[in-house]
Image (cartoon, rainbow, N blue to C red; front, side, top):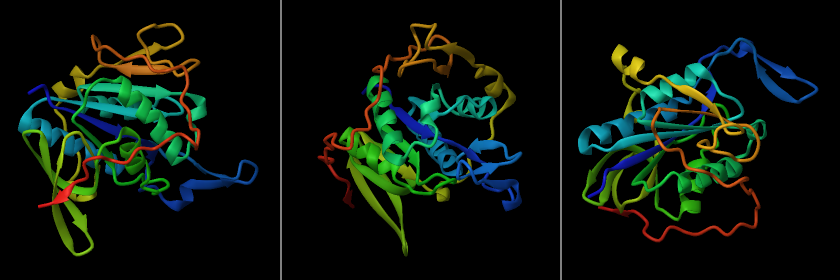
Length: 256
């Protein structure tokens, strides 16, 4: 059996614990602007990272984190890198205010070019908009099963057994790998890391316009990753054509 590989999709959001007085409405741009609110990892994405780390503790393997953002955020990047073995950061000004489908399209292209994987984990929703659409859309684009609202998971051979949240309790389902999970807060907080872990995850910055090893979606990109890791090349652009065919999962999870 090859090395088990989990991919976690992570998003940076304004700190959801900030008071409402820290936000202002821009009447011209017609958008809400956080004033002095630090960006943090989406809390549900931290739950996703913790689940990936628990599976790594149980079966070994590696955790890869991918994030799509308008610009690089050093403090958030460092925490993501500490929790993962590989970190792919895709940045571009056009990524500002992408809708759920467009984000899923970018992630789908990145994941297909990042190599084989066994599991993808996303947060159940983002703390800023809370739509909860990217995970299921991404699973559909990749033609893999999606199990939403996961509260725990364990791997048995080429299958995964997941406890998922329901209105009155939980349900246990089983699916063949690869599969996508959306993680809930019931998983628990992301673990604390030692000083050695923090020091070992030093990042370096490259620019896709100058470095041929970097992901290039067209234009200048800031990529951060651990040294000596190969970073796959993406196409020059991503399509958000609404007429792009979508495939349905061929092996849906079944209750057990």
